[in-house]
Structure formats: structure tokens, C-alpha cells
Length: 171
Image (cartoon, rainbow, N blue to C red):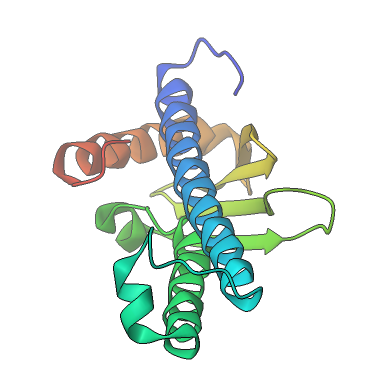
């Protein structure tokens, strides 16, 4: 996040930085849970009795326990992919939010490039959020008519303020 003397830029960058931080935290938590369930599955496949830790596993038997564990893993993997869908409805209606995830085999977390495209009354701009691990970079990129960018940033900052006041997610 850059420092700027423009208060609208600070509002926009701060909002999207907070959104990215919350998304990364949710994705990381979901990944950790999926990893825990994969370890449990490995223990069941190795024939370890999980009955002491999970009495229900003894009642279900190994096959059913593995089935339940697979469902949990799938649910947490889905949660990890959905972690970036936190954009408040008000902003979703005013712009377009696109999230691209790219996984690398030797990295813990997927890299994300998310773009919010906003069209104001005089110009359009993109807010680009890029992550690598826990590093977050937020940039505001005007698309055309650079002289009208200041007005468009003011419009977006106003929409963000409204979204913050009405959203159930604290960003």
C-alpha cells in the first residue's frame, strides 16, 4: 500500500488492503483445516484407531470415517477458493470484481490477482490487488481520461464508505 496525500486514494487502498488481509486470513484458516483432515485421513488409512479422539469414528468404521473426512476436506478447499468473495453487495453492484488464483507447487498459499473495475461518471479505474504469500500490493490504475481520475476516486471512496456502513463484514 502506498502513502498518498489524496484522502480518497487512502480510503480506496485501505479498504482493498483490509479486504485482501481478511481474505488471506480466511484462506489460510481453511487451508490449515484441510491439512488437519488430510493428516487424520492418513492416520485412518494407516489403521490407527481414532476412537479415543473421536468416538464417532469408532461407530462409523474406517470406510465411513474416510468418507466424512473427504467431505470435510472438500468443504475446506471450497472455503479457501471462496475466501476472496467478500466484496460488499453495494460495491459488487457498482463495479466488476475478478479474482484469478494461481497455485505454485512449492508455495503454501495461492497467489491472487484481484481487480475491481469501477466506472464513475467521468472516468473508469481499476483497483488491482496482488498477493504473494502474505504480501499484499494494492494499486489504483486509471483506465482513460487521467484528468478525471480524481473525481472517479472520490465517487469510489464514497461508495466504499457506504459499503462499510452497510456491510456485515468489517473491512
